[in-house]
Image (tube, rainbow, N blue to C red; front, side, top):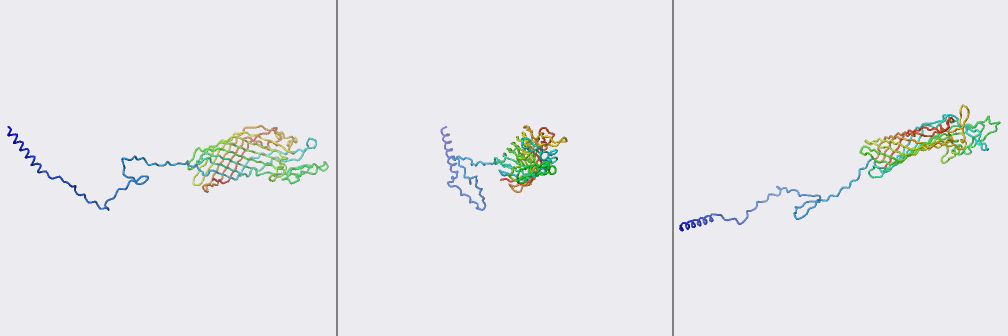
Length: 397
């Protein structure tokens, strides 16, 4: 038994020694590197770049923050037209209604004892200033911000360049103007009865109508685009109409002598106003318009001075005192709508020319023709309108 275990051990030991002798030796050096390819056959990858230049290899030991990009400050888009200020002068060619008196007016002369005697005759029947008059218009405004979305504007309109002059008659009298009919008040010389019947003096008489309108508004933009804009507005509206007849020619500049012998009917209007205004643009042309409505009051003023105090009007039964000439009308409610239409052409960035049409209507006014009506016992109210064609230029800066 012991001999068998001894034989097994010897055989195993011989086998182990024989196997170890057949294993090759392990290498002690690395194999040589392959040769590098030629430089003209290798295209290096592009270096990574960032907002501040090339980006190096990522290092795990560093804390990287995102690149800082400064916020872009955006300004509000400007609502055209450009220019913070604007001014629009225009020439107005206007038409207005006439209100002639029905007959002749007889003036009264003081008799020196506190009373009066019949004086010269003023044939105002059917006469009135020309219905066509020239005038002047002006619009001035300023935007209150860079976006041009809100602004303050004012408008001015003036008519009063046309008067009508005709001759009055003075039976048995001379009417003289010491310094001329356009520079002084008249003096009346009553002739003696013996020669009064054969002398009839003449003298100039002038009829005049004068109208002015003005408003101040705040404008706020509702719609704005590359092709146009639309604004809402609100503000104050003023208008003034005056009819007058006076003795003499049209006075020279700076003279007010015609007020000494004058009959006048004036109507001032004051009120609040709301409306819309805007324009549309295309290929250098533009079409603009505004519609405004003013609500307010009128305070009519009727007056007579000099020889017109106590004046009389002719009737089939003779001359009778003009009751309406001494009436004091009260304040009354009135409306004043206005419509403006404009077509224009852009010449430069801040210069435009235009032509347009405007219509203004005042619902209640006192007219001189109604005041000089001998059948009227009080001042009756009429309406009044002005329509005008205008030509002008718009300047912005």
